[in-house]
Image (cartoon, rainbow, N blue to C red):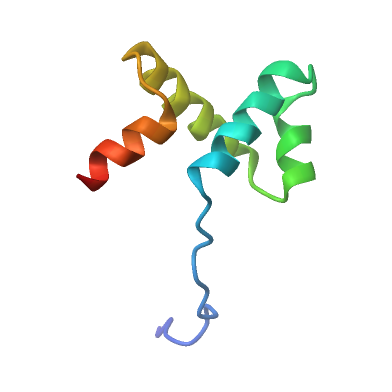
Length: 74
């Protein structure tokens, strides 16, 4: 069985670090469930959970998401 052509060609959306940080901030400060915030932003709740985890890891290293991205560029 051949699966070519069944799936439409889609491109992955890319989000800025500022958008990710703001989305994570909303989950922390709004008191709303992650799933609700994700729905309002038009993203998957799994993506938002991953961003929260990434943000926690970055913060535990004493960095911000923006500073981490800048260090990757150099």
